[in-house]
Image (cartoon, rainbow, N blue to C red; front, side, top):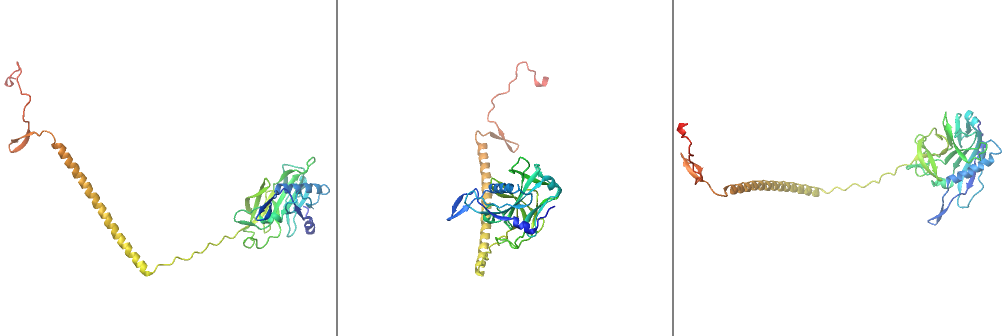
Length: 338
């Protein structure tokens, strides 16, 4: 596995100024610049393809051409052309002490397969990226290091490097080094702690980046990644302390005693009201029952009254007249002859 020296790597990582695909907008009298990440990386890819025609070593990618003078984005980029067989057997180590870089271990293949690939490493070190306009940290976090991108392009025979490919690790994962991380991050974050920091994965869609996943760091300065993409390191922001409200003043003793007196009066009054309501309900029920009984008696006494007769000291009802008198039919035998 080839390991470039620290001086060589530092000389290869050149600072570039890129102006591309941006529009000016007024905000309180100042112009804001919108940068398309995909267009920016297309310029880096094309420049790397031109430089790697003449060498197979790790080279810096200086960006001197500016499509339009509308903004500044500082990007450090380096590129390396490697055969897939060498990538599988030896991997690539493009890191040095206290500097950012990447390590591709053996047993890594391009996906989809390509015989030769250009591996491009980028760091968004200034401009809009430092203010979070290009890469925004997840809610509650702040970026502690410049966002790094590891990209790969197919440069096999007949290809101009415009087709992006992934790096599929069948053994150890790909490793990104972020270099020196500040002991205290900005925005009121606590001192950097690798055990509490998170590696952030960004997804770029239509030229804009969005944080989609986080995972723990592999070491104090490195993250293991699944392959190509955009990655950063974020630390949690300190929560805002809650505002302390002054305690409610206690009422004086005289007010408290008067309050208890009013509570006692209210309790006695409530009992009296409840008792009165209960008595009213009972009286209403009794009156209703008596009223119904009287109505039934009146309905029973209505109409013609039967006569009464005395039978051995008892008075019994008796009819005042007989409508049909008993008669004997002709030919009927007498009762005593039956």
